[in-house]
Length: 74
Image 1 (tube, rainbow, N blue to C red):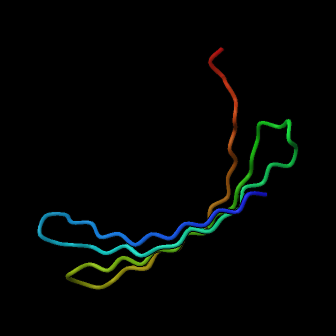
Image 2 (tube, rainbow, N blue to C red):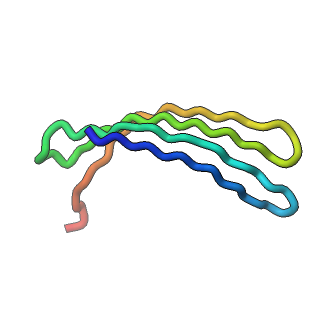
């Protein structure tokens, strides 16, 4: 298992407004067999968006997926 963690604190400007993003990503990637080209992962993301004007927004996502490492263009 490969644990992953990322923290992000960013300010983005669009026109005259400025939004502040504060978020966390936590996940685990699992490779059941070393010779297998498939990997499976579970991720949880959480982000708080604070604009200069208006209400702040809170987003939370739960992701399940697979990743394939292989060359299909031979």
